[in-house]
Length: 231
Ligand SMILES: C[S@@+](CC[C@H](N)C(=O)[O-])C[C@H]1O[C@@H](n2cnc3c(N)ncnc32)[C@H](O)[C@@H]1O
Image (cartoon, rainbow, N blue to C red; front, side):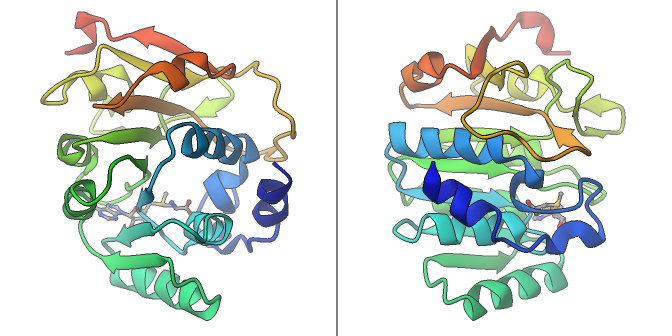
């Protein structure tokens, strides 16, 4: 936790030029970083994949916080991918690979290389929403979908063409999970969240790995994936 604290608040918030929450790793929500840290440890993840790096705030955090595992990120906008790659190279982060690519291709390629990657899915803003294709490409690992509707007014979520980022996204997967998890908005974390602006919700699933660490996490709430979620 000390190391998370140390690294998290040393990352410059380059994303502030466009991100409504002012940029910073994980939207400047350190509870998200602590959750990711718990999951990386309990699942002994052997890689991290971020989709949509923008200017690399979260990529920089992940690459610095976890120097011993490979971190993959990508962006479909060449300038964003180039900026992030340069940012990471300048910081000497040799464990990070940044590609200018459509995210489902990266997810698919990395998915086959590792035992249990953690996928942080945060690619949006363009005309096409890549989330369905990203989820369909995951063979195995832990998945955290950013900007997910957790049904709480304090937490924002994404939507495309009237379709919300919610349980229906999981229900539309080729092999839908039986359950998914969302962060408990009332959970008490060892460090306070200093993001006083926009916070985003998150939805998590386990793909072909044990669900127990998600079930046992004190800050996560489990949900059955109801059939009505497929609409
Ligand atoms: C909200 S920003 C990501 C913020 C970043 N993860 C962070 O924490 O600072 C979303 C990014 O996704 C990228 N994006 C949109 N569609 C994409 C796709 N199909 N493949 C890769 N990147 C995509 C956008 O260009 C944008 O930079």
